[in-house]
Length: 98
Image (cartoon, rainbow, N blue to C red):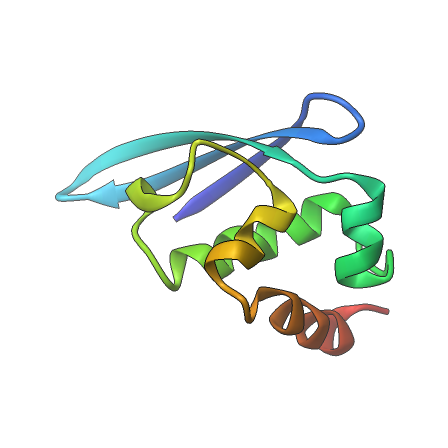
């Protein structure tokens, strides 16, 4: 699985997920919104938005197939479907932030 994150604006990002399926590459494209307030709430601004998005997709893909992920969402939306997301992010930040 290869993830490409493209900044489209201050809070808007394009995310491309390339995955191998039956020896074919499948590409899925997402629009993700991460505000500065979301970043601070989830990570206390200890990581940048790109790293948070990368973590979020890893988190999501461990729990559901790429086809089940909404094509456009705000970072805080993940918590509605996975209530453990904020705590999991905080643990990850504590382990990985400098």
